[in-house]
Image (cartoon, rainbow, N blue to C red):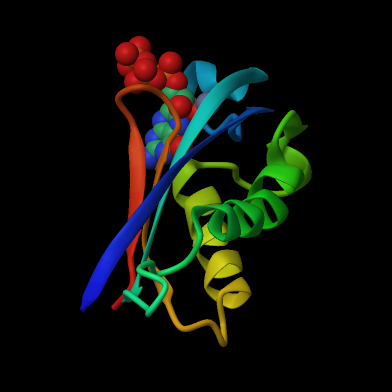
Length: 122
Ligand SMILES: Nc1nc2c(c(=O)[nH]1)N=C([C@H](O)[C@H](O)COP(=O)(O)OP(=O)(O)OP(=O)(O)O)CN2
Ligand SMILES: [Zn+2]
């Protein structure tokens, strides 16, 4: 049976957006507690799982949290919108899961309680 498995993560980071008039006060350095939901999809194997939640945590730790937690996102992104950050995370996780018996289905990255970007695999 094919099923979706999800796990929630959080990291804190600072950033500012370009002062081009569009982003207003966001051009001043400020911080967010980002919330990330990662969903993978795949067959439930003979052990009764798609993968160990710990395995998924390890991949996200290496590809996302070790890189961005307590960092200045402007060191990583030319324009650190939630769209650009989500896009990079989606690519990094897709590559990191390459060759595994399951695949990345969807990520959702909240920048604030109300604002998020979501990417779903085709
Ligand atoms: N499309 C995007 N718009 C904005 C982004 C973004 O990443 N993508 N980011 C920001 C700011 O970084 C920040 O997230 C917004 O902060 P703030 O103005 O406090 O957002 P709120 O919507 O919560 O504030 P309100 O005052 O309630 O509008 C801005 N835009
Ligand atoms: Zn911001």
